[in-house]
Image 1 (cartoon, rainbow, N blue to C red):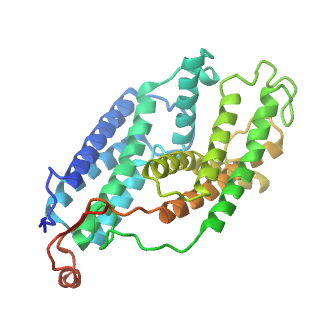
Image 2: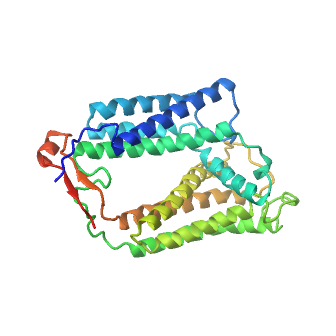
Image 3: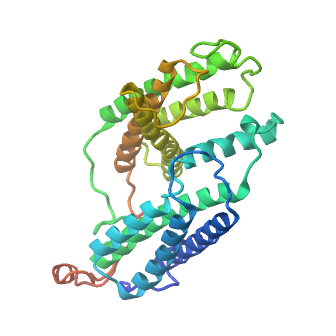
Length: 349
């Protein structure tokens, strides 16, 4: 029987995650300061908070992690503060991140195939690095906050349970299949448009708009392939398999897709809704027919269905916690009484 103090140390896994959060946030703060001082124009022209706001949020996040790791506030305070800071870190990034991710994916493909620069734009590495680091920091502080709250409550930091075994979840395979079918169906209009445009069919666009493009032009065939990858992931999650590598791979790809689709879908659907009311929030290209804007509604539906399937898949495939440790509860008095017991280490084989 092993014993383990519930107080975090900078040398255990939770402490190392804390160091990672601090490091990420310091880099975000430095980049935000650089972008603010140099007056860099955002690479993606989408509504977002100023650089300096994200920089202040990053500095506050690093300070919070350093203090909370030692003083151990109430678990609810830890989670609430972590989520607020996670959102603030995305204040200058959320609506710009999807296009940044898409640009970088297409840029890598272009470097491999020699297709040239995506959309004819030179990369702005300081801008791209800021958004990627801010996104990573936002995820890291959320994970760190939940993990610390679990330790304070006296449950396993890794799985959030008292027992290593997850129990038998209710059978949701039918729901997984239907969510997957819905996500694939929602992706078809976008994939169809991009395929037709790449093949020279000018549906929904003014004459000559895509005259010089082909299926292998960056932003056309490659995005169709990404849509096909999304469909494969949906089919994979429709059959919940408790294989760790498969689980992590499918959920990671799906989460990246959700992070691209939902912000774009929300922003675009808002613009479309206001246009229907006669209000122009942003200038819209006249090269596209009005109905083409409905693709943003498709993005939103696609992203939400994919998010729901991913969440359900993650719950259905929870494995036995192989490094299960339950520390003595150090949160509320009720939790202390409930969990006053030595750490139980379960060899889950």
